[in-house]
Amino acid sequence: MQFSENWLRSIVDPKMSSDELSHLLTMSGLEVEEVEAVAPPFSNVVVAHVVEVAKHPNADRLNVCQVDAGTGTLLNIVCGAPNVRAGMKAICAKAGALLPPGADGKPFEIKVGKLRGVESQGMMCSSKELGISEESNGLMELPEDAPVGQNIRDYLGLNDLKFTIKLTPNKADCLSVLGVAREVSALTGSPLSLAPTRAVPVSSDEILPVKVSAPDLCGRFAGRVIRGLNARAAIPEWMKRRLERSGQRSVSALVDISNYVMLEVGRPSHVFDLAKIHGSLDVRWGKKGESLKLLNGNT
Image 1 (cartoon, one colour):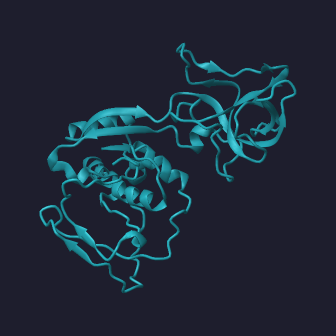
Image 2 (tube, rainbow, N blue to C red):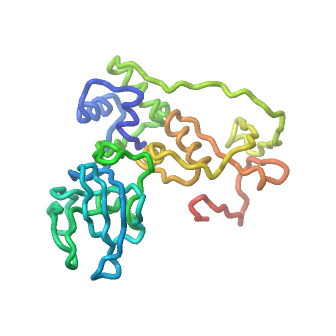
Image 3 (tube, rainbow, N blue to C red):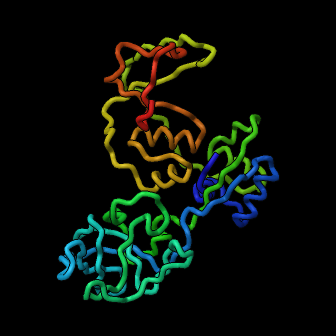
C-alpha cells in the first residue's frame, strides 16, 4: 500500500513529524517499508510566464525568451526546449538556483552566462531536470492560472513523502488512505476531516442485465447505467499527483476517478463503455485460449 503523506494528512493531521508518524504506524502493526521523497532537493525554482520567444541569432535549435518569473523585470533566458512558446506557463530556475545533482553527484548551480553569444539569466526546466519525472518531452507546462513567482515546490506540493506500508491479511481495512487515517486517528486522538459527500438520485430506470456464472469469485455484482458523461474531461492536477504518488498512472477521466475512489475510501469499481457491451455482462472464469487486453496495452 503506497500513498502520499500529504493526502493522509488532509484527512487526519496528528501533531508529529514524518519520522514519528512512520514509527507510530510500524508499532501499530502497519509496517512502513519505505519512506521516499516525492522530489529531490532543489531551490530558487518558480512558476514563470513566457512573454516572448525569438529565434537565437547564432543557433538554429535555440530560442531567446523573455520570461516573467515574478522578479519585477523580465529575464532573458536562452532555451532549447522544442515546446517553448509565448504565453505558456512553465518552470524557471532563477540565477542562484541549485538543481538536483547530475552524474558527478554535485548540485547543479544556475548562473548568469552566455550561450552562443547571448546572455541567459536563468533556465527553463523540464520535469526530468528537476527529478520529478523519468520522462520529458520538453518544458513542463503548467495551468494558465498558475501564480507567477510562486515557489514550484509549494505549487506542485513537492514537499511531500511517499509512504509504503506492508499489510498483514487481517488489516484489509487499511487498504485505503481513509483506512490508514482511521487507524492514525484511533492511535493519536486526532480528528478525522472527511470530504463532504451527497447522494445522487437515480434519474434513469435503464438496466444492463448481469449474470454471475462464478459465484465463488463474485458474491454480488452491483452497477448503474450513467449517461451524458464527458470521458475526455481534463483531470485536475491535484488528482493526478495523488494517483502518481500512489503508484497509479493517469489514464483518462473515468478510469482515474475509479482508481481515486478505490485508493481513498477502499471501494474498488470498474467503468465499462456501454457501447461496447453486447446485450449483457457475464462474470465468469476465463476459458482456455482466451486473452484479455489491459488498459496499458498488454495482453
